[in-house]
Length: 225
Image (cartoon, rainbow, N blue to C red; front, side, top):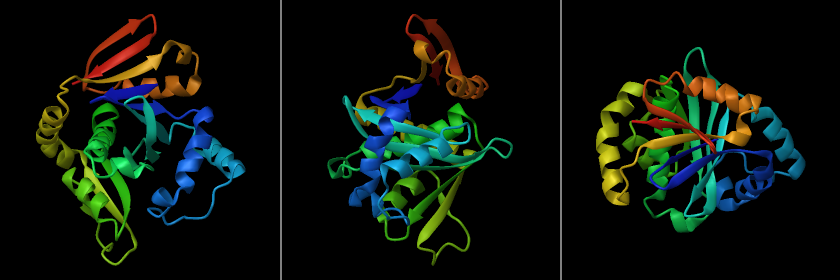
C-alpha cells in the first residue's frame, strides 16, 4: 500500500524496512529531534514494530527519486473521535534546506484530512526546532494552551483550518514541482490477502475526496481530488 503525489511515495511500513528505520532513528540528526534519545537495539525495534503494526498507527517509508529518505508516522489514531498525531523525520541533511520537507509535511496533513477525514491532527515539536515549527504553522497548526514553556511542545490543526490553507499551498507546490497530478493510493495485488492492508482499504473507501477507483492487473488504485 502506498500513496503517491508530487513525485514522492509513502510506502506502508513492512518488517523488511524496520532495520533501516532503526538506523535512521539512531542517527543523531534524527534522535536530537526527539525526547527519547537512547540507542535502539534490533530487539527493541522488533518489539516496537509489533506494537504499531495495527489499524491505530500508520507508518510509511518516504521514497523520493528512487531513494528511501525517511519516515512519516500517523499514530495514536482514535477512530471514534477521529483524531491522530502526525510526524516526519528525514535523516539526510541534504534534504533539510530543500522544498522536500515542506511537501512531505503538506502531504502528511492531506492524508490525515483528505484520505481518512479525521477531525484533528496533533504534532509534537521541540521548542528549539524553529524550522519544523515554521512548517507546521504554515499548514495551520497552532500551539496548544499551556505549551509555551514545555520542551516538547504540542500543536494541533483542525480539518477546517487546513482546508482554508490547502488550495493556496497545493497551487504553490504544483508550480514548484511542475506536477498537478492527483494523489493516488495503490493497494498492490499481492496485498489483496493482507488482513491489515484490507482494514486500511476499508477506511479509505469512505473518503468523499475519492474521484475514481480502478482495478488493474497490478492492483487497485484510488485517485483523490
